[in-house]
Length: 489
Image (tube, rainbow, N blue to C red; front, side):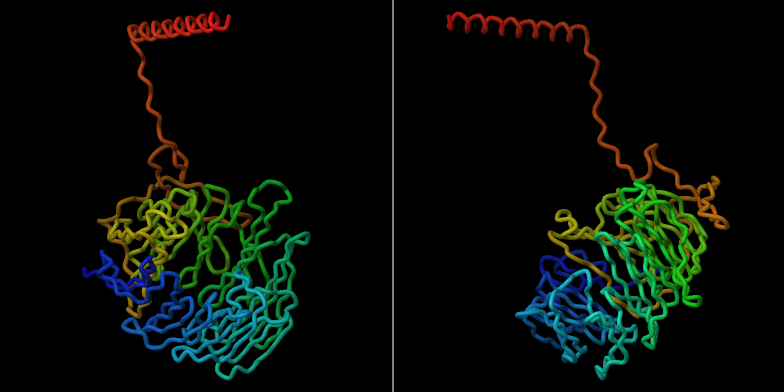
């Protein structure tokens, strides 16, 4: 079968390059920008590159437009790539809303202080027709073409917000108050500018808003950096689901301990939640929040779902051992197990049958490289760099059909040994998943220290020889001591 073709965008020490995914040398790559610190925004037909003092548009063949700025601190491109928001620093910060591809500034805002955790200050609706900004404790909804305010609503101390990816979006605004109160406030604002939900969340110092890509389902991960019971070093964690019809929040059943990763399926029919103390547990839920299937417990903290929804990577990255379990989400069968230590990036290719793992700077300053694998975990290509900052697949409109794994290439067979059912609470039961056999008696994810070589047992002659050496050394020290005493007297 012919191998699918797609390009990579590589940012390394030499700059930003366009590369065929099977490219094996720097000479085969096409230079886009010599600035290795540039920010890349890739779309189907255009590359938007933000350098230190310049924004330019590239059509993958040549530069089609550019605009100079004083000093670019941050940039953000709208979902449909019709606008770019540029934070430019002169005497003070100026935030420009710039149209693409003509790069004309349509609106400018003054920013007193740049807070990286709040960026981007402006967010667009999924069709780019509206954009939103919070100023003076007020949320403004603005028409992107006319720059006219559509509505405004007071949100008090809410600084963070997310936009629902639908035509008339719900805006989720929230604030996090630490210090003594340690509570958050969350508000939902509908497309008419009315607050439809307003609630305080106690024991909360961190919030993450996770919309499904179709905008029909919302998960909220909340955490507190302190555990009043003293049972957990990681604090307390909860996952809440917002019911758009009933306008209520409900808590989802999870394993005790931290929440590591949440990932919606590409078709938004299920999501996987990875939670609990190590070894953590990965569980698939339906979109109503009902647990469906348990993948088993292991030392894992990341989840990556392929674009066609067929394959799932459940990984142990960061300070874990780099183990990767590959699952078939349709059959709920384990495909294979592999390792890629010290991974900084993990990306699925557009075809959904290959994925890329990379070690990049500054996460890792040595051994920078990327490796492409197939869904069986077999290495296809490895490229090493002196310094690699980023790598990503170029977006494509090519259609890739979903295909099941080839049975004759399957390397790890599921074990039919029954698995213990996990019961999160009354009424919840999970379908048993296959056990993954370990290669040794160590717990999953554990890297044992190097084995020390055992010392050989000495013979009687060797022992007698060592004894004589010690006696001679003892006699020598005694004579030296007597001579020193004579000299002193």
